[in-house]
Image: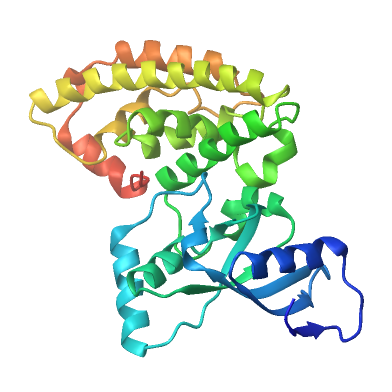
Length: 303
């Protein structure tokens, strides 16, 4: 490698770090410094990576065109790029950024040849997207889609691992189930079902390929409840009751979890009872004022 800065001075760093630095140079990039970060003393590289070889991880949430354009305009206005991306390298010639998708896009739009990056030798960091990615706050849909993409990737790459092994990366079990639903329908009312899912959806024991099948079954039960909910909402709208809180209102009235109880029913029991209750819901007994009053105390969750 060409000369570069180092911290701490004179301290030997692992061969894997040296090999990664040589890879960067061979790929047409440039290592500027090798250092130990101040929290866990892990070795990292600060470098310039060739733009054409940097891409978001396969598990990344979708790019927000609005945020990307705003960021591009700001960088162009100040005529300076000051916020390096985080990157890992799954193989030579390829660099993934779990934290920097929008910044990479901005540089690409501005026709930059290189991307300033903090390159982490441990490629596993790519699976810590949710914990690292603070560039733009996730909404429920983005989190869920990102988690299910990670989940499926891990099920293929590490089939002997379990959900609990990646509890930190997944953050919460209901994101997995919702991710399957959002994959099928980007307009799914996840915000309405999230309060129920948070209480009864737990991390599953077993290997990821097996638990993925269980997750698909759980998503099917939520989908069945949503279909019943759509019928109830349509009946209310037919009566002239059209309110943004209407789905949440029906779920609040039919949820089997409304009363405090020492033990919660299982996931399957909860959604079987919920679906049956929604199907038995009587729209004729609801007034617009009821929904309006309820919405004051509980704003609808975003999707």
